[in-house]
Image (tube, helix red, strand yellow):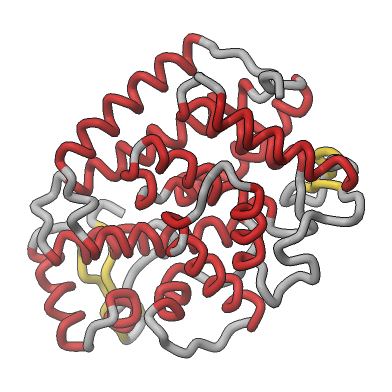
Length: 323
C-alpha cells in the first residue's frame, strides 16, 4: 500500500519530539508500571471515556462499580458495553497489532452480544454521522473493506515513519474505512493505543481516551476537516496534542509521593471534573471503602486544603478549594 495522504508539518515534527522526550522521562521514573492503583484508575477512565464518546449513559463511578463486581441499576446494553470493553483492554497485550484476525477478534469481544456481525466486517453500506446526527461521510463499500484494512495494517507494520505519527494515520484511515457495522470508534481508539504500546509499553496504561472525551467536539472537527482536505494532517496534529496532554497529566500524578492517599486524591479529582461536589457515599462507591474510611480520606484532603467542606441542604459535601 502506498502512503495514505498526509503531510508531516513542523508542528507534527515538534510534537513528536516532545512526546518522545516526555515518554522517555516518564518511563524512566516507572511509577506507573509499578503502581497497580494508578494503572487500574487509568484503565477505568479509558473504558468510561471511550464508551461515553459513543453515548454510553453510565458515569465513571458506575463503571467503577461494575468492574468491582457490584450490581447497579442501568440499561443492560450499557453494562454489557463496559464489561466487554474492559475485557478486551485487559487482553490487549496478547493482540498482534498487524493481524486482521486479531482485529476481528478484538471486535468480537468489544461488541459481543450487542450486534449481529460481531467479529465480522460489515456486509452493508453505511453512512458515518457525528454526535449531532450530521453525516460526516459514507464508509467504504463493504466489498472493498477487507482488502483496505489488510493493506492499512501492512502499511503500518512496514512504514519507516515514527509510530507516533503512523498510529494517528491508522486511527483516521480506519474510521474513514469504517469496517464494522458498529464499534468502529471503540476499536479505532483501542488499536491506536495498541500500536502506541508497541513503541512504548507505557501507553498500555495511559488514558488517552479520557483526553479525547474531554475534547470530543474537537475530535470530530479534526475528522471533518481531514475529510474535507482529503488527508489526515489535521487529525494527526490533533491526536498528537491529545497524547501530549495525556503525558503531561500523567506526569503530574506520577511525580506525587505514590502513597495510597495520592491515588485516592487523583480519583476524587477526576470525579470532580464532572460533578459540582463529592459526598461520603460517592467516595465509598468510587474507592470501594467503608463510610468510616471515606470520612477519614475526606478529612485528610480537607486539612490539606485540597477540598473544602460545605453544606448542601441537610448534608455535608466537599468541593475543590477555589471552586
